[in-house]
Length: 123
Image (cartoon, rainbow, N blue to C red):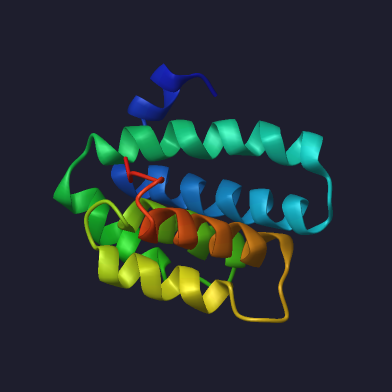
């Protein structure tokens, strides 16, 4: 979907797409299918950008996704939450970074360290 197509979706539909695609991204990362994961990365980022523009209503949905069963979805929701609910976002990233590490867990550990030392600024 193009960026304009995301705007046409309701917030509920957009959140469901975010959940679906972020889970797929995490699965592809863990399967070491980086080329395919990179395509999903771009899609998740586009949806996240649209969600951020929808304000506090979308923030509430992102916080609900912190408990999603898919590690990829929890990772993306936690990284987004760092910008408006840093305690919750950092907690989920720390949980994902707990051994045994997956590629998503490694990404969570790196992001959490970068956020703590100030080299990562949440969007």
